[in-house]
Length: 237
Image (cartoon, rainbow, N blue to C red; front, top):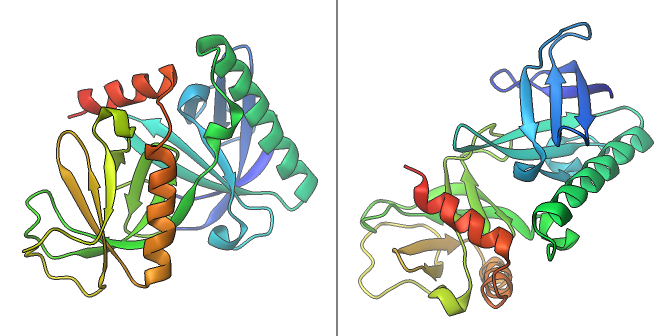
């Protein structure tokens, strides 16, 4: 339990907020006032990811919390003046989460909870005729999320990246005859059982890094927890 500085969802200003991590309840809560009885948000530990983001947040002790809220991915950005305090929070969150995962999914491993890659790409829409738009992408193991801005509170969309044995693959380049206009020339195609997703990168190095990250995920067999995540994606509107 303690006070952390939290970035406002709309105005971008940081304000002190009381946070409470409960292993018994399996959740992380925060309160707008120190003496508040009810939390502003109650985050279930199984939907949460925590990662240090000093460059993105602009603070050496910056921490990003990503979680599911109302079937949407939500980000909150935090920091504390004391680096050790922020590290203690990070380690405590990971410890509680790993305990939960070991109970719910005995074969789960702790290395599933780090972002594999982040950066800008361009994407087109489902008809693959729309103009490509620049977005910030975050690959959280099998969840590829994209945002208009790196510090957006909510993801604009998500893509589940499964395994090759379930019909997922990644290819360099775009399909012949792609009609959507794009300014970046280094294409990537993600093939899924439902549809293909088309992206472009600014440089060949970015393209190869993203392909390597996608290939790493697609080449791994899915865990029971990931089957549950895939089912959740298919049920989403």
